[in-house]
Image (cartoon, rainbow, N blue to C red; front, side, top):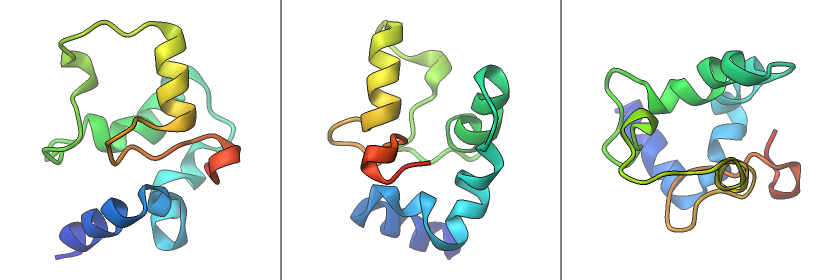
Length: 94
């Protein structure tokens, strides 16, 4: 029930994961982390989850190549047409 409600909230506002009680899992644990530690803490929670939602891609099995600039843009500004939140402070990310 909570998962469905959370997915609906994210569909309406993809920045919802950084607000209210969602921030406790999606933002606060990432503070001060970089690299692999940051991925495990902030990205894997969705992208490597055992019961990963269908709309969340498995980043280890992408069918296209993505360079460093592409990753930076997707992470900072989000991905158009997706529920991926924008992590840049300019978009109210952490």
